[in-house]
Length: 208
Image 1: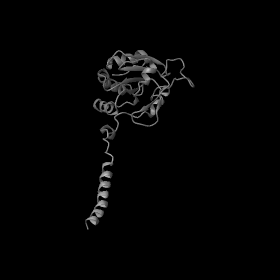
Image 2: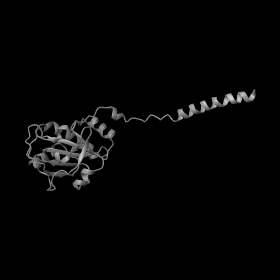
Image 3: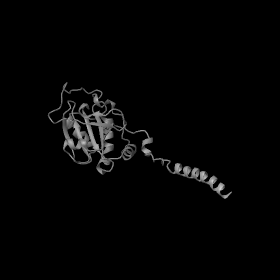
């Protein structure tokens, strides 16, 4: 009788053990980045390879930019997704601001770049390049400061290395013909400085 009970108990133990094992192997749900569930504050990048509204596209047809004064031959992803953007195809005039959320001068000047994008709409475009940053931190800054212009992502500092500059923040002034007219690394820029630099290097007068 005792032997029969023992034989009946063994299968029950095996079933219980299998159930515990299966339960322990159930994958633990991964914690989702809260920013991933929120819409991006930045504009998409689809229009970056066409000339700004009201601005003539003076880039020579078939120009390969081998003179070294053009944007590097890199493709960067857009913060909002979609096809990567080839920097050589970006149409000027444009002001390209390279920044990171952990850089205090970058945070200080971002609102001025947003205001420039509004004041100069139709004359030039403002483009951001977020580098060495997390998506959630960049998105939070965009939301807090009301930044709406298109944002590219360069986590590996490829653009800075190609331009042989390692400074934060860094701003590139790109003419309509695709030439880099000026690279500014002087620190946080305000509205007056941006207006002056745009007029000096891109020959564009931006209204107040």
